[in-house]
Image (cartoon, rainbow, N blue to C red; front, side, top):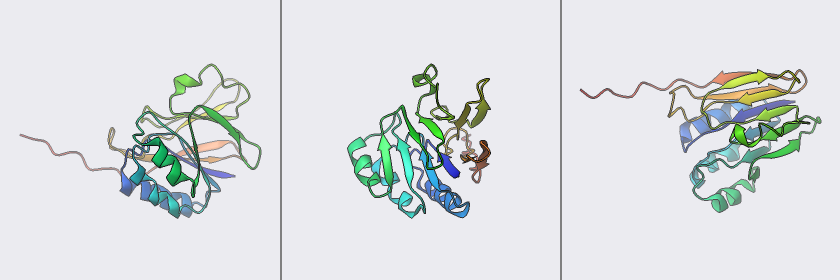
Length: 171
């Protein structure tokens, strides 16, 4: 099963659209979001996804009720941390802040988190795969990214979106 993963969109609509295009082009069967849409207008571009989506709230959502309402036609959104099982049986623990789950990962095959805006893929000594897709917005590090997970091989990759130009320098 191919799963698209993204987070920290922070209202960057163009990058949300790019992420959706990549997930559709790569024929993802599920998309997982690890928090920080920020506002309700980040939701409509997600309607173009060709697969269901499971999302966690982040710590920057301004209107959770509005986001929850918009997500009803796209997929599910919940307060992290929470776990779910994919159609192929992969057990995923989803959160925005890693600190919320660092001592409760037993039983998970994959832990998806974000908040740091830095992409990372690691496997611990117990074989649990940890994925931080980085920031889809690109606001902080100017290197927007998403991630892909193949559950059949339990391999994940970071996929870079087009880099942002450097901000202007004031003299």
